[in-house]
Each structure stands twice: as structure tokens, then as C-alpha cells.
Image (cartoon, rainbow, N blue to C red; front, side, top):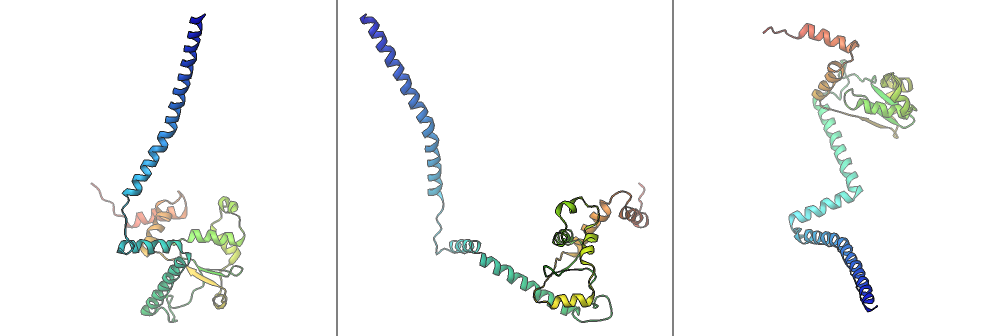
Length: 229
């Protein structure tokens, strides 16, 4: 009888030992990752170089941070840059004599490529191969076309836009410009980039059998030199 009690006591002690070991093991598993993360974070914090506020780099960092935090500063920066562009445009046009009305095409007002949205007071001068596809899409959305319709339609976006806006006359365009609520704008791009973009879009990747595909064949036929090796 005494031997049985000793054996039961030993089994009970062994069971508690196993439970304690399991608790210690799982506790270590949970605490070790937390300890490592704490050590890494602390190391990064103390290893980070401290730049005094009176240091030139430190002051620049503060100014940069304040600039990004303040939307007003960003808005003023954009407005200032746009004003500089307008000033540069006026000076260049005056230097080339393009601000004077004449009889040739460079000095005659041309309203042909403008889109005037009277409802939203927008006046856009369409410059092809200078974000024209994106802004044509925007004007078609403003005209009432749905994105689904524009995505499925096979009609060129320019044709759809002209159905809604039409081509303004010179007098109509001048009247729209005199409206103080109107916002007029155009998108510009480097002329050689426009030329390259037009070549790739209309000639290099032209759809087989289309007008531009045939035009490309004629250009090759008439102007490309054949070299026989």
C-alpha cells in the first residue's frame, strides 16, 4: 500500500513538472520576439544621427517638412510657377511677334481646335499629342457620356466631343474669353516628342489596312532607300 502511494505521488509530481515546463516554453516563445523587436527599435533610435536644429541640414529638413505639411504653401508654389510660365509665354510671343494680328496663319486668330464648355466655364485649346486623349475623355465625361459608353464606343473621341460642343466661331470664342468665370488652358509638350509620339501612334503601330497603314507604305516606297548587300 505504501509503495502505491509513493508511485502515485511520483506520477503527480511528474505531471506538474511537465505542465510547468510547457508553460515556461510557451512563455519564452511569446516573449522572445517581443524582446527582439524592442532591442532592434531601441538600437535604431539610439543609432540614428542627431542633427542639431541650428545646423544647415537640420534647418532645411524642418523647412521641407513644413512645406509638405502646409497645403497653402504648395498651392502658392503651384500658382507662382504657373504665373512664371504665363510671363515666359507672353515674352516669347512678343519676341517672335506672335502677339500681333496679321494676314498669315501664324498671326490670324484660329478658333478651330478649341472646345468651349459653357456649363462648366472651361475653354480648352486642343493640342494633339499633348495629353489630348486624356482631356478629350474628360470633356466627353463633362458632356454627359458615361465611362462605359466611351470605353465601348468605336466612334473617335473627337467626333463625340464635337457633337456636344461643336467648333466655335471666333466671335463666340472671344465672348467666352470675356467671361470672368471662364478658365482657359492648354497643354504643351516638346515638339520633337509630339512628332515621335505621332509617328509611333499613327505609322509604326497603325492597324493593318487603315489609312495611316497605307500612308506609311507610301512613305517607305517613296523615301526609304533600299540597300543591297
